[in-house]
Image (cartoon, rainbow, N blue to C red; front, side, top):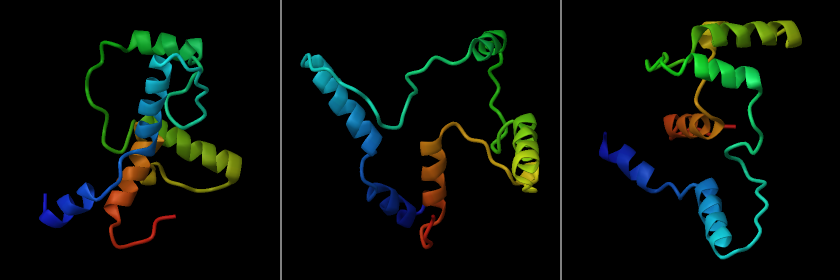
Length: 116
């Protein structure tokens, strides 16, 4: 890493989500009732079909391509074409592990630009 990049990363404030979760855990330990409305892990269980698929594929330990699973990127492309008449090509679609990681990656990539 370059020293400029390292100093940029060090200047980032702590994750607000992490701070909220840590504070919430502290309150729970103190016996307080907490209602969580922030971003983060969903309180809802995934559909049974997804649970079954995870069980069926738990033995797969290979990393996915950096841009995401090709079949999923093609499905996203198809969805936007059918539902919104937008022509996004699968090779221009990126699928990531979560919104916070993707937003962070975008902001970190553009140190001299406004990202909306």
